[in-house]
Image (cartoon, rainbow, N blue to C red):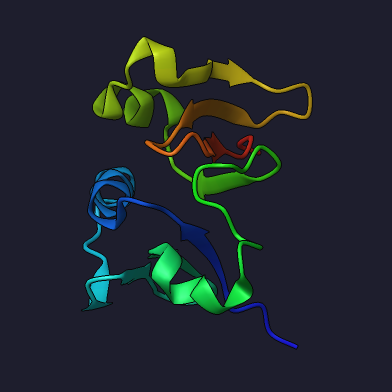
Length: 123
């Protein structure tokens, strides 16, 4: 069974799409005002309004997640962190080298979801 996507439900699709467009440097596909997605090869990152899950009767709540990380592998964590220049209040972890060798910087998106920019050790 192929993994297809992660969908973030938000009360402000435009704001969250703008954030992830800035992070990825890519323009999201917007097939409807209530839905956007960042595609490519492999799984998709989708961003959608609560209207897209209304039939789930409150099972999905915008801006309430504290259990996942949205992760992007980048060539240079420090350069990406500097390019994004996040508000210090949104920084969870400034660029740091993890015990397993990855370089990571963690910040919050506008809904409070944690985003990890990481690179793997060279060699």
